Amino acid sequence: MKTIILDKSKKSLSDIVFHDIRELIETGKILPGSKISEASLANKLNVSRVPIRDAMVRLESCGLVERQLNVGARVVTLSFHKLIDIYHIRERLEGLAARFCAENISRGGLDKLQGLLLSQSKNIEEMQTYYQKGGDLDIHYLIVNYCNNKHLIKLFNESLYYLIRVYRFQFGMRGSRVDGAYQEHKAVIDAIGNGDGEMAELLMRQHIRLSRNSIERKLEQGGFGESRKII
Image (cartoon, rainbow, N blue to C red):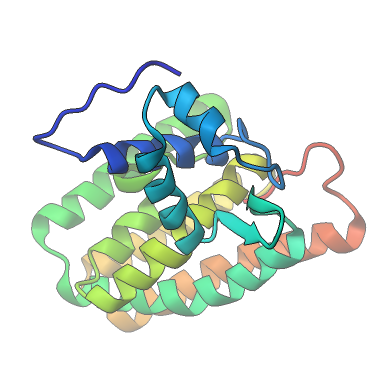
């Protein structure tokens, strides 16, 4: 990784280090279950160990890192059962976020959601994949962050979102759910655009439930194998 150049007008060094380590975990460059060496990371990122320690505290708080007595810090170990648990929480939390979003989103926010959906449709046609990049390039992230409920946003962003992204990257975003997931996103955004909070919540919960059901069926069939493809 290239040497970090700090732009003080935008982000602190701790923020940049947190982002870079998080990205290493999300993309599997630091493998699930592996022990984390602060000295090694400091050398890799060309920083002191102080921002590394700050980043480790934040990574632990958002569920990407676990500390074990007499062992130290390790990247969280992934399992399909943990993933199912997360989906149960997501169904309720993101359903409520979609309702609030329909009731509170601005014209500019809606334009951004619709524009992102359109750009993603082109990628599906060309690549037959539906991997969403993070933050403002992720429909789920945008819907939560446009919901105008600070407590819900904080819970999602600090406790669930980054862990969800680790699973997405590690297990892939291709397969039979690609077109269905896109159409479900479109229906949710249409409901948000119509200001129909009840329908937006219903559709978002249904979308996440269908994805969870797909995972559970594959688990029962032992169908992930080496490809481990999940939507």
